[in-house]
Length: 194
Image (cartoon, rainbow, N blue to C red; front, top):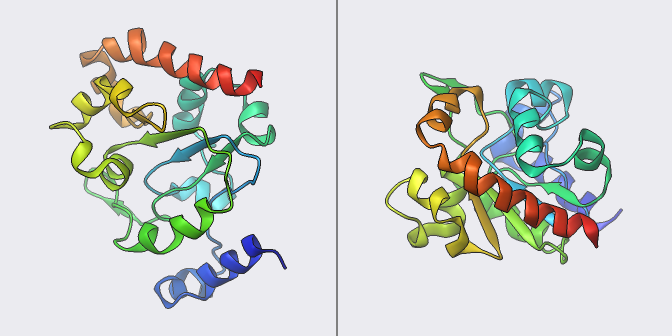
């Protein structure tokens, strides 16, 4: 067994995840030693957990558009890894999915990140990922953090979540698709050129 296999098994054996493991639900993330782009987000959707394929929904289609990559590049290039703050669907809340469980990323991100030494760009999707990784470096709100994405480069690239629930936000903030998306596509294209 590899170190990655050991960690995967440890996640399943963790008492915090007992209910998922008993239900036959596996943790959903993608760690690849050659990956150069990391997508850090909230947690898998219900659909992703059921299909065991992350970002396989309208949000994923929009994210790939923003990145300027095809489905083939996204899933099979070996350049893109996915590490949510929780590897299991947390359930539905009043306004979308519930937040990732506290303490989960603290326990599992460091050992998994250690397996990916070539990460050049970490896309922080949504407020939870930005709060976890940027901490006090964040702006007063998500919109301002995303607008000032260049302040966090080259390590991090904060983004709004591409969920259909955020279409209104996109209409209210036209600078995102006019300025931020082209900058993101340039960064991603640079990784894929090498």
